[in-house]
Image (cartoon, rainbow, N blue to C red):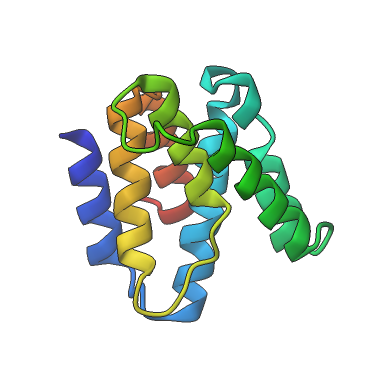
Amino acid sequence: MLNTKLFDAISSHADLNDPAEQFLAQRFMIEALGRVTNQLPSIARTAASTANRFITGAATADEVIEERVRLWKAIEGRDQSDEPDVLKIRTAICVLHPMELGVAAEALEYFFAFWQRGGLGLAELSAAVENKYGI
């Protein structure tokens, strides 16, 4: 339930309808995923760096889309599975989607759910929340 508490803390702390807060939420997800890169299946290990390069202007939207498509293909036919590796890849896919007005909270909620169900490190997730939100 730690993830639920962290999600609730962020959503009560930040207005996820504000574009600046959406950007911060995106940065948070990228940072969190970057902290657990070694826990991801090898195919998903570049997701955080690709997303980070995109939001800093070093990668194109096409590169992000290619990465996202590559990951979806890796779990094709298993995308609804509860296999830990599939859930970890779904967590990685979350950072490759832009935050959009009206769905930022939902995207963050999926990120937290896939993270927890996939068994990614809660200490790393908590550290990223602390670093980005101070909570």
